[in-house]
Image (cartoon, rainbow, N blue to C red; front, side, top):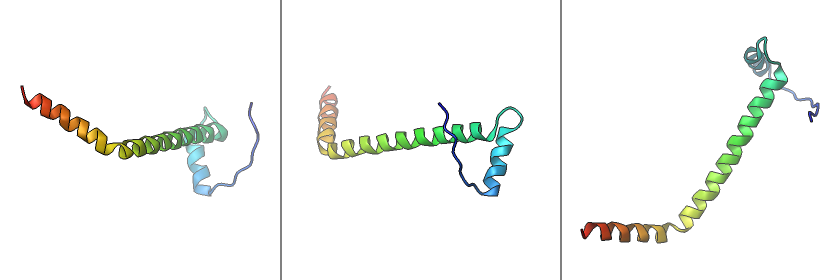
Amino acid sequence: MKVKTSITLSEDVVEAVDGLAGESRNRSEVIETALRSYLARMKRDEQNSHDLGIINRRATRLNREAEDVLAFQGDW
């Protein structure tokens, strides 16, 4: 379902959107595509930040495990 909304954009942004839209698409399609991409990137960044927090909280243990593995491999 589509919901009609009104936004205010700078003239240069509207011109750029119109340039991207060309003959085959309209402003709404260009803006929706851009927003979907932006929202997906924001969600990905949020997940990456969350994952990095987990890695950082467990860094000491993970580093110890890596050192044990490397020490074991060096004994060959």
